Amino acid sequence: MVDRSIEHWYATAAYLYVLHLDDLALAWEYLRRHPEYRLDWLRHSGKPSAAQHAASRWGLRLLEDPSLDARDAHPAWLPGHDAVVQLHMDADPPQDATIFAFWRIPGYKQLLHDGHGLALMVRRPGRCLRFALAPGLEEGMPVVHAYRDRGVTHVLDTPAPMARPRPPPTALLEMHTLQTLDAILAGASQRDAAEGLIGANVRTDWSADGGLRSKVRRLVRRGYALMRGGYRRLAHLPLLEKGRSDGHAKRP
View (spheres, one colour):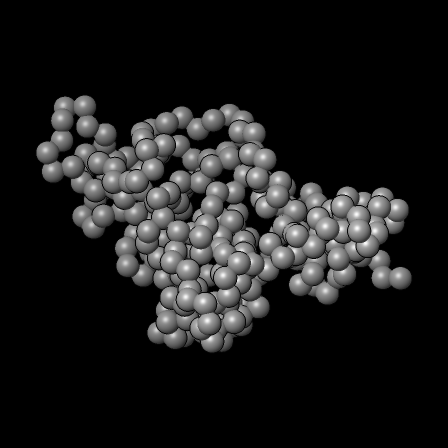
C-alpha cells in the first residue's frame, strides 16, 4: 500500500493560509493548478509577446509563476475587480486632504508593473489590499480613492490589526476544495483524499452511499469547476463562452 502521508497535499496544516485569502488570491490558487496554464508558463514565460497573448486568455496581463502560492505570487489580473482601489492625484484638495505617503502605509508593501501601470500590493494580517497608481502620482501629493467597494475607505492610514480576523465559514470549504483537488491532480484516489482531510477514520466511514464519499465527490467536482474557468467569477472576469475549443473554457 502506498504511503500517502509524505505527499505534498496530505498535511491539512499546509493549507491553513487559504483561510485568510480574498477572492483574487483564491482565483490565483485555482488558476495556477490548471495543467494548461502551467504548460503556457513553461512555453512562454521567457517570450514577452507570446507570454502577454497567452496571459490574456487566462484573464491576466502577465503570466505568473504557478509554483508560487498566493502568499508570494503577484498575478496581474485584467481590470474590473471591485477590490482594486485606484489612487489619483487630487486636483482640488481640501485642507484635510489625504497625502500619499508610501512609507507610512501600514503593512508589507510590494510594487510591480503589470504591463499597463504601476500597482501596489499591501499585505496586513488577514487582509491584502491592492491599488492601481495613476500616472504622475508622487510621494507627498494629495490623493483621492476611486473604488466600487465602499468597505475600503481610509485604507492608506488605517492601523494594521494586531490579530487575524476569524475566517468566514466558506473559507474552510475553499481549503478542503484545494487540498482535495491537489490530491486528485497528484493521482490519489478519492478515498486517499478523504484520508488526508479527516485522518484514518476514513477506513470505517468510507462506503458507497456514505456522506463522506459524497462530500469528497462534491469537492472534486467543485475543484475542477473552479480550476477550469470558475476562478474567473472570483476575479470578476467575464466567463468564456461554452463550446470554445480551449480546454480551460469549461464552465463550472
